[in-house]
Length: 51
Image 1 (spheres, rainbow, N blue to C red):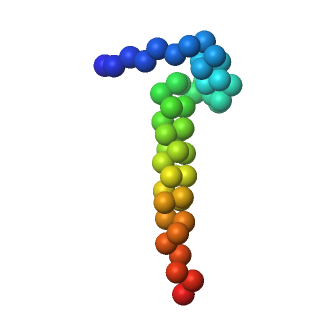
Image 2: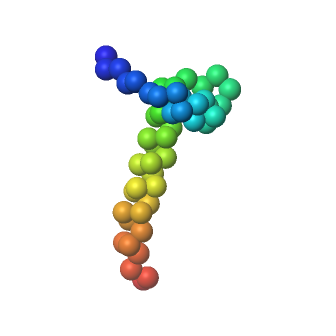
C-alpha cells in the first residue's frame, strides 16, 4: 500500500477539518468527492441552452 508523507502544517489543517473521530481516509475521500462534484458542476455549467 502506498504511503504519503505530510508536513506538520498539512496535518494541522486536516485535523481542523475532521469531524469528531473521522479518519484521515474518510476526510480525504470526502474532499475528493467535493472536488469532483464542483468540477462536474463547472464542466456542465455551460450546457444550459435556455430552452
